[in-house]
Image: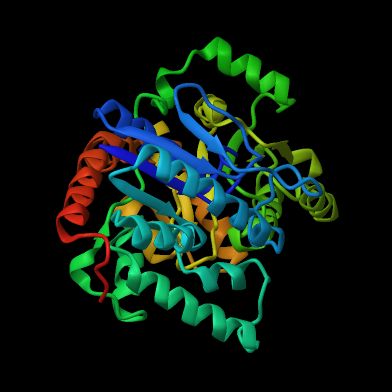
Length: 400
């Protein structure tokens, strides 16, 4: 089967939906499918993938996270590139990521009669609100909400990264339940191996390179640094944890806004107990995570997935997160849940794990087993092919 993936982002950039795009493509290739990824002009090329890039903007190069007006120009260029690819390769399936990709894909789908599968990562308008790109009371919000609804209804089939997102599409947007398929984020279990299998010498050298003092237990975060990710809440919780126990260190791995949050750490008096690494290549993430004793993800968005939790699970890290439906889907009863937006409760939950390392280690090992049993990409890849087959049988122009 020939699959054209539309990725309206600067693929590859070591975070979030990029990881899902990457692992889906690699898994499909292993299962004998032919995948071409059509994406923006900027991004990191990866070996073993057929990546075709649109022309880049001469006045705005590089990776930008979240909503941006320049995405409108990039989406036009992506659309032009995708038309040429579709005419040349005649794919069997168009697999579109994000609402911008689905909008581009709809034109191709209807013109060339190719089924469109929409990989739904979360609500378009909710993400824009999270990134402070629009206000709920603005006229633009109403227009974009209607556009989002149209896109959701016109896709042949929709896959979601969580059951919560599937319910959202049916209950809020009125999509037919029979075309919405929860296909949870998964994890590459061969890449993300248990931390107790890591080379102690390698970990000691990495710890030294990062300047983390000996004797400090490490709390790790890997992901974007942003308000909707709860980064300020995490730093305020860190200040409370360090005040109780100075033998703790917070390792924050990610981008953008590193300088902003470094200043906040200084203002909170914990600069000596925090390390900001900046962007970590996806290939290096497992060994960095293996340094940690506890992991944390204080994400505030209630519509997006939270794939970093699966990386934590696969490495075998006991994990603290805010009490959200998406987190419960992944962690189940093994997660430690703080009240949403409550930095003090987040600090208490982190301290709970740090103060009982035996129980925390047991929880981490059980999370690794849960990842193996429920969240492997091998199983998800086969389910994705089943959705493709369903889309092809039902045709490219189905709507609700």
